[in-house]
Length: 508
Image 1: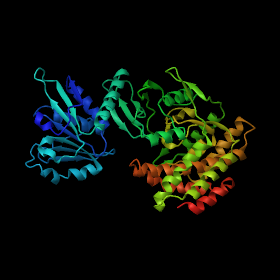
Image 2 (image 1 turned 90 degrees about the horizontal axis):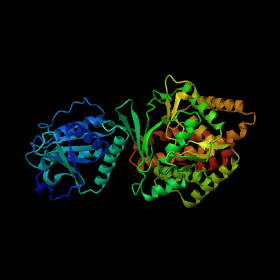
Image 3 (image 1 turned 60 degrees about the vertical axis):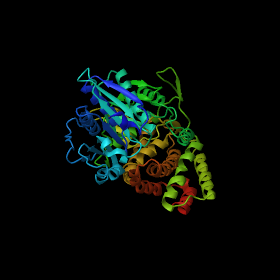
Image 4 (image 1 turned 180 degrees about the vertical axis):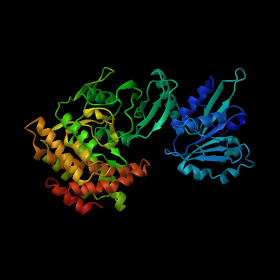
C-alpha cells in the first residue's frame, strides 16, 4: 500500500516484524480472537507480500480447523464462510474494475451478520466502511521469510483490541505456551472471554477478565458492585483454591496474571449434566450430593490469594438480592408491555421482597456459588463420587442462604426440570442433610428454598432480556417461557403469597 493510500488514515499505531510464516500464522490466530461482528479488516500489500497466507491462517484459526479449505476468491471476488461464532466473508478485489462494484458484492448486507476480510482494499477506494482495521504487509528486502505488519485505523478502539489480544499471547508465552493455538470458547453471560488453548501436554482454558481500567461502563461497574459480583480475577483464584482444599473438583490454575486479568487453568471438558438437551437424573443426583456435602461444612469469609492478598467473600445482602430481583421490573416488564413499571408498583415490589427475605433471615447461611446449574457442572466420565462433576463459574460466590444454590440446580435455567424430578432431587438433598445432622430443619429450609427460587427466577427473567436488548444476545429470550413456568410453580408456596398477588397484578 503506497503512502498516498494512507491519506485518509492516521499514522500506524503498531508495527511488527515477524521472522517467518509460523509467526505470521500466530499473529493471524491472535487477530482472529479479536474479531467481532461488523468488523472490516483490510489487508494491503504487493503481490507475494503474504496477504492470502495471512487470511487463510486467520480463517482456519477462526474455524478451529487447520485443514479448512480456503480457496482464493480472485475470480468470484467474495467467499463467505458460515461459522457458529459468526460469518466471515473473504473478499479479493484485485480484479475489481470499478470501485462501485463493491456495492454489488453485498458487503453492507454481509456485515449485518458477520465480519469481512478484504484483500486489495484500495481498489474500492473510499467506499469501504469507516472504522475498518487496515493492515499493510510488506517483505523487507534483506530476508525472504520476514514480514512487516503495520496497523492503521481511524477507530481508536482497534488499538486497544489489538493490544489486548497481543497481550494475551504474551501471557501465554510467559506460561511456556508461546506457540499454542487459541480457539474461541463460548462463554457465559458475563463480560469475560474464554479460549481453549491447544498445544503442550494438554488443552487448557484461558479466561480473559476485561474489567481493568475503563473497559467497563461506569453503570455496569456500579451494578456489579451493588450486587457483589467479583471485580477482578483474584476471586477465581481464591474461591477455586478453597473449593479444591475442601475436596471439590475445581480447575487447577496453571498460570495467572491477576493484575492483568489472565487465568490459564485446567480444561475439565464440555460435557455437562445435561445430554441431548435433557437433564440426566443420575448426574443431577451427584450434583445434589455435592451441595449437601458443601452445606455440611464450614466456609471462611476471607481466603488467602497466591499474590499475597486476602480475598473477602461478600455477604449476599438483602439490598443486593432486591436489586437483582428488580432487574425483572427494569427489563422484563418493559420488554413485554412496552412501557416502564410505575413507581408505586416498583416500591411495593421492593417492599414485598424485603419482607420475604426477612421471613427467612434465620435460614442456614454459607457459601453460595450463585450459578450452580448445568452449564457450570462438567461431567467427569470415569471419576468417582463427587469428583464426577467439575465446578466452574464460581467467582461470584457470596455468603447467603444455602438454599439459593439448591434452587439454582433444581430449577435449572438452561433445561426443563419437571416437577417430578424437582421433587425427587429436593427429597434427596433433604435426606442427605438429615443424615449429616439431626438438627436439620426441613420446614425452614423449604421456606428458604421457595424464596430463593423466586428471587433467582425473577432476576434471570430480567437478565435474559437485558442480555438480548443491551448486549445483543437474543438467544437468551428462548429461555423465558421456561423461567415463567418455574415462577408460576414456586409462587404457590405460602411464604410467597403476598408476592404472588403482586405478580398476578403486574406481571405481563
